[in-house]
Image (cartoon, rainbow, N blue to C red):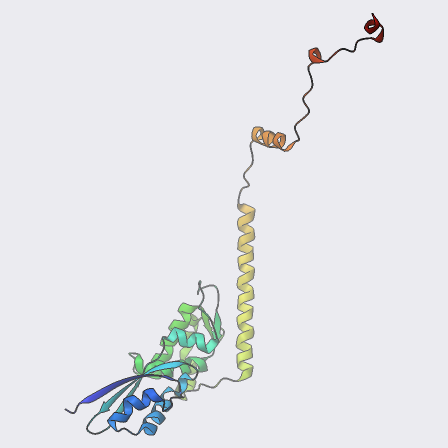
Length: 239
């Protein structure tokens, strides 16, 4: 068995270039760098705008190169596809995003090789499962409900459709906003109901009186009558 060299790289999807790092690692093995970069870019093209880990297994004798492309978690790919910062904290109620079947297929194609699945349809189901846990709608309906209707999208999956029209994206955005409005109204109703049913704490009468008295300005103390100095008539003063 011939010896194989393992080389690990971190490249931008579809944009691997012959920089110093690549040259230092591939040059000594006398491998055609342009050919290897071309294959890497072809395999990493779905990850444009993302850094992708790549492993190269090079047969030292035959110079054959096996390329393995790592991928981010499905949840990260969903967030990138929908430009989300995070998923929903209450995925069964609050919706964080709305994804098309084409976008799901695109992610499934990226992850299929690293999933324990036999075909693309199974990979699509896995992606839909991640959408469910993130509170992401699929084709404007809850992911759990959508997976029951997956057979009606068999043609999309067979044809590996990944392009979405602007009109469809606008419709998905509109539907998501409608879902979010409904959720907001429901939360406002729940809050109002809780406030209405929460008993108000009444202050005891004696305590309320004390509080009222504390709020009043202190009255001027009256000088006792015995301490009031009597005015002496002027006539008595003369005597």
